[in-house]
Amino acid sequence: AKAQGRAKYHVFNPAMHQEAIQLLELENDLRRAVERQEFLVYYQPIVSLITGKISGFEALVRWQHPTRGLVSPTEFIPVAEETGLINAINTWVLQSACHQLSIWQHQPVTPEPLTISVNLSARLFLQPNFVEQIDRIIYETKINPTYLELEITESVIMENTNAIKIIFQQLKQRSIKLVMDDFGTGYSSLSYLHSFPLNALKIDKSFVKRMQDNKENMGLVPAMIGIANSMGMSAIAEGVETEEQLAQLRSLNCNFAQGFLFSEPIEQQLVIKLLAVAPQW
Ligand code: C2E
Ligand code: CA
Ligand code: CA
Ligand code: CA
Image (cartoon, rainbow, N blue to C red; front, side, top):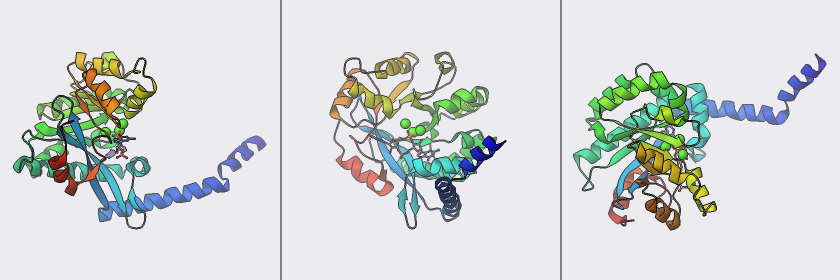
């Protein structure tokens, strides 16, 4: 009992107490941020390795904090997930991205229609009325949903296979595209992968990075591209930072690439400018 008492006491050491306070502050701040809509959507281009042109953009949320400036989603998404605030935030991102897509569709800025990809939290995706919400957004923004892509992480798909299959079918009926995000970081089983109507696998940047470190065999990236293509899906490489990586990915028949080599995520106002100056990669 004494040992237990000591172990318990350990939990409340001053450093951790400080951490708990900071977390509470973050939670309260985040709640206010949702009410005041302190969020922004940034857009990062996705480049077709066949045409060398920008084929679409991934929507990435930022928090415009009144005193801290731009806060990264890696900092607040986990807290938002824990508190359930993620649903309000992610719905807002989805709405904003569809609004942007609608503008592009009604006043085209490129010869080929642009796509928009939105990251979806498991919590939002698995809400009973998720497909209804999507329908409402499609109706309100008047988008052609063929060019809307939803990115869902591997772990979500593998943990909720039956629920996910039903939702995927409904989204597929609406011509919405489905992307498995962070491919390779979780534990997807290849036999399962086959039974989902996925359009693309997004190879996580950690694998693209290791391709460089491991020049002999390029790590797992060739295998991942092979899996995607043999199953009739596109492969999208994330975190492409060098010309060398780009050349390697191209030689491996990777379909799309995204990363700082092309552009960092940018604010919405800069998208048109980027499209105007973007070279053919
Ligand atoms: P993700 O979906 O894996 O997004 C890719 C992340 O890699 C983004 O970070 C992007 O800015 C960053 N990145 C892009 N190119 C490069 C590169 O060349 N090098 C490096 N080192 N990094 C690059 P970001 O914007 O900080 O987003 C982090 C994560 O937050 C995302 O990872 C995604 O899981 C989550 N997230 C972002 N926006 C949303 C959202 O609206 N909803 C949900 N549920 N999650 C979101
Ligand atoms: Ca993503
Ligand atoms: Ca992700
Ligand atoms: Ca990733």
